[in-house]
Image 1: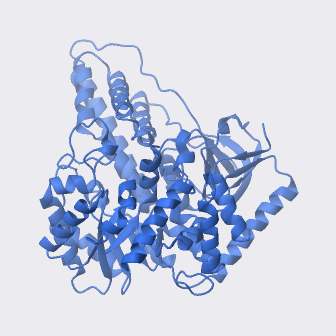
Image 2: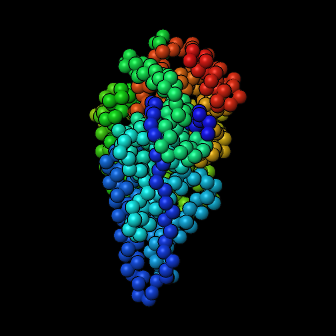
Image 3: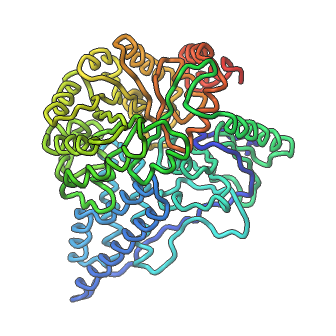
Length: 558
């Protein structure tokens, strides 16, 4: 095997240690049919196993907190899905034992996801993990997972389920490498939150022999097999330089010549606020409100009340006095369906009734959320702004702005740029609303027809793709012409080098996971605006993502 391998670096830091492989096992149900009268007992066994797994996932989420909690609570909802439960009961009624019924019901659901155009391919790993946990409960065997070890190690896996990633012990798991996943996968997002160096989408990672010593650079995506002492010293030196830069950078985000680029936090709810404040976030650039509708205490059958919503929003606004808090209204659909908003079946949920489309079809849900935000803002000094997801054109933007006025909300209204049509017509959007926020994860997905969760397509999900940078530039130029702001709240903002390029493209604020803020602040502080503009021009002139990054690094002086 080559001594140097290249994947996608998704979490800052370096690590060196022996390879340990994620435990895997194929859990197959016993070949047995039910005898007469056994069905009630098997239904009860299946129901108990499902509830135990769902409760365990919720407990893991509560321990992990932050974004991990939202991910694990979504998995718990998968386990408790009423349609899956009905299918399991039907199969038991037809003579299957509980294990076989669970196995086959999940397999059928898996096929449905694939038939939906694989938009949910990234959630298939989550679904498989839920199935395996339920089967392990029924079979009475340990759940395959993170290996036991007497000492620290580098974890190697095909992919990591959120339940495994969320509770990794950084003192034991020095870093991890996966064959699948991408920069916006759950594993990548949780790795950044944990501060564990990680490389994903590395072909042939499973071929690394158990016990082999590797060095992992979570920023460059490089994995060095059997690193010599001088190679490891060079990696450590680069990491030390990054840490030193972190210590020197203080205060608001800005280039070295004083051009301000506010650094904001992406949060999923009040539980994420403390980390954002500690990291020095100047506000919130993306408040994902789905946790209220899909998370702990929400059964998915009806939206939370106006009062319940207002209380949660109030907690976040109170944490950022005089700061900017941008709230994204409910983004349901596709991988986050709600029975009262989304059609039961769509041929391609990624291109279906999701985001603002779903809210406009159920206007009272949108108006109640806007009223709740208005209530929460009363008496607060934070600057509340609201934005709509999945806006395709000026008509969508106009309807959202109309809804804000109807609800009596005086906060600034904006829209997310997540589809190419919105970027191409950005100036027209700004005749209806007051700001733009670029969701680079979905924008890449729709620009390149590449599912953001499929590791095999990760090169198209790379935010360094020049075509994606062109769309960012179009949006930023439109905002400047209209005297409006244009932020980035996708995962692209968490890359310190790319953050400089985005500033050079004219982006006016950057929002990211709290753990990335110090790295971005330090990198921006090391360059002038002119240097960032030259790096942006060099990146856009490249032919591919790898060339764009190399050109930007060269323009910034390494």
